[in-house]
Image 1 (cartoon, rainbow, N blue to C red):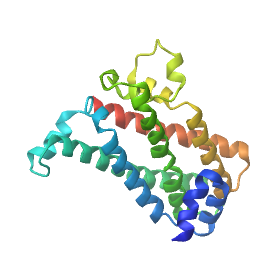
Image 2 (cartoon, rainbow, N blue to C red):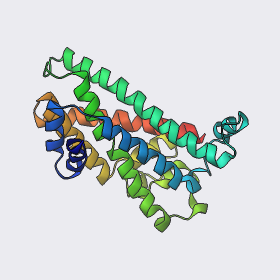
Image 3 (spheres, rainbow, N blue to C red):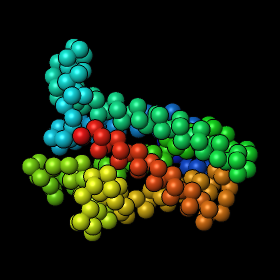
Image 4 (cartoon, helix red, strand yellow):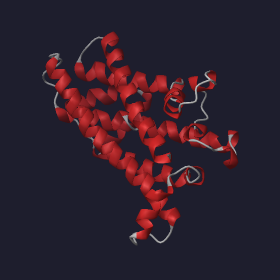
Length: 228
């Protein structure tokens, strides 16, 4: 248990140490529980903002069948459960896909599904951490009345602020992820790939960028679709 918590600490201060340990002991239970906790907390914190554009039919369907007494509670539960479910599906699908790719390209044949699965739950924790930072600054730079779309909740300066002519909500939200914290995310992924797959940094960075783009793409589709 102590080692699992150390992995979470080192994920921020020394990611190479985290993935070196996961390479020998692929533990993911604590990381998964922390992810679930963060998603639930975030769903509660951002509800005043998300309720403006969350499709009401999702929450009302839960209220109608008697699971929750209010639409507010149902909405928060919908956001939390959806986020956790999406995280689990992505973890399984990406881990299977990455292990298949590693076999095709004959990359570190010692690498197993459990190693990638454990690494996934640790690297994915960066997403809610970045969201927490966004939420922390949200009341400073945005009023509730200013929140019209999902993109409006991204207050950390990103490329989307430089392309005012773009109106596609999917593209705008995707571009909003291209910021300094996005670079940090790619850096951690690069360290994870280089450590586990035992490949050079250039190839690891390329793989990290591809994984990051796919992750963000799925997140964007989920967020925009939930709000439409």
